[in-house]
Amino acid sequence: MAEQDFMNDEAMYDKALLDTLLLNNEIDAFREEFLELHTYDQGEYFSDADDEIRNQMYQLLSPKEVAEFLETTEMEDEDYDHIFEMMDTRYASDMLSEMSFDNAVDLLKILPRTKVASLLLLMDKDASEEIKALLHYEEDTAGSLMTTEYISISEMMSVREAMFHVKEQAPEAETIYVIFVQNDKKKLVGVISLRDLIVAENDAYVEEVMNERVISVNVADDQEDVAMIMRDYDFLAVPVVDYQNHLLGIITIDDILDVIDEEASEDYSRLAGVSDIDSTKDTIFTTARKRLPWLMILTVLGMITATILGNFEETLEQVALLAAFIPIIGGMAGNSGTQSLAVAVRGISTGEIDEQSKLKLALREAGSGLLSGLCCAVLLFIIIVLIYQTPILALIVSFSLTIAMTVATLSGALVPLLMHRMKIDPAVASGPFISTINDIISMLIYFGLATTFMNYLI
Image (cartoon, rainbow, N blue to C red; front, side, top):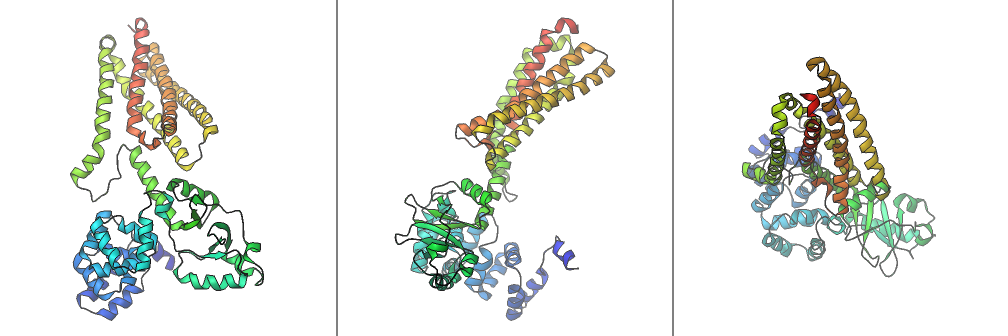
């Protein structure tokens, strides 16, 4: 029964009950019912609530209790902006002070500068200074993701001293499972797991039991590179250092999961020909503004296809049946090119494709396109012969399909590889863009062959 409840798609809390308790001003009952929920469900209830209910919640819950669920709740930027606009500034400041620094920074980056300044002014001085330092790092870098709430110990400590030090720092640390070791110059010199520290001899020194082969990231590294490192090494946390190897902070796995989701959504949107990620709450005009750039480019490219067809008007007039196979050749070329594009973009994004494997990828995709094209061409040849009883036409259409699919598959792989070399996001080579380019190429191949062998068709 418990498993069935867990798999239920409906909310894991009684929204109607919570609403009723608030309506009847049953403060103790509401607090008991609400605070027993998982922070995810608390956040879901809060995000679905209107301003009136949220204001009541601020009266009944402490800033710390709100911080616990709000820092893990996923909402649109404009929703967070509205929440802070409606929330009392002192309450908001106290709430941010209760959050981990990296999560507080993520929220503050959404807000107007004047609002951020007023919130920082009311914060505890130490928390305010830490957050200000994190706010200065560039977006999408390791520095913008890291938190300064970590456990560090000195290499000169004994294990007994280190354990005492860990216990002191643990309440404020974002993770306690990985402990970082510094020398007297605050440089990162080692790492040790909590387990290894616990089982070590009390009189041993940290430098004797730590792992000196530390994998770290630079504060200026791109967040995608950080995500790959944490994925490859199965890290729960990775240290962030400056150019002199001073330990500045750590990045934890929960922040990297958000990065992976964000990057995947961004790449998917670009592959679909959308310049930015659409939200279901976007207005008609906002949605159109995001999609128009690519649509206008594709309109111009579509005119090139139309011009090609116009130039082969004489060929079409002589053998009108050629027009019947335009959608098949163009569509199959576009489909095979998009498939190849998806493989290439994913390989680049995950780091699977490096300099050595680029040629291998191109050859594999070209071979795959040729083999797929031949199989589809044989099927198409048989169908055309059976229906239209014109072997020459069937041969031209089938041969055109084979070449078009081979070229399209190869271009689907080469275009993102070329863009990656030019330091352009390969996801920009969107599916619609590749499909339109392949339409142009396939029409040139098809009508070029048809015109060349026109004497055999008439």
